[in-house]
Amino acid sequence: MRSTELLGLYSQILTELNQRTVVWSRNAPAGDYAELLVAEAFGGSIAKSSKKSWDVRLDDRLLQVKCRVTDAASTKSQSYSPFRSFDFHACVFVVLDSVTYEVVRAVEVPRETVESSASLSEWVAGSRVTVKAVMNLVDAREVTDELRAAQRDVDARGRQAGYDTA
Image: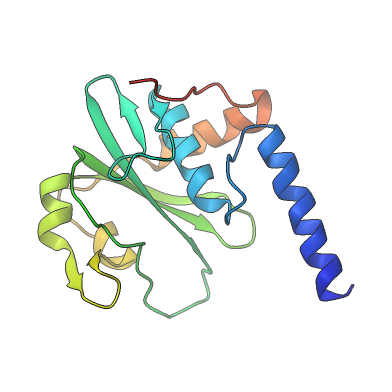
């Protein structure tokens, strides 16, 4: 297939995922998908796109969600997208397999730990953490099983999580 045909197919896939409300933007789907899995796993609601510092509300807790799609064979160091504020209670870091989009690993880390572990990057005007560093933090709470269960549920029954109205 020509490149334009492949991109057209990708666009059709994004359109279908949008119609199923598995993703809600035309961006690369990993971020939206990870937010959905976190909301589904913990019974939360998804922030409207205009929220700058958090992605999922669980009653009185605000969660930031960061996702990377990784290739198991790669030896490159990978960073999550930058933090530009720390107005959340915890961050759920998600790693998805680059071939299957299955949840490889997920951990929840308190905001204080995220903030103290992040390195300021002038180039991106924010603070960054690497995948490897986050997965090895002492107070990272393993939530891989919960996200894998949510992934199975979304595949089987579709989306249940709503949007935050606060």
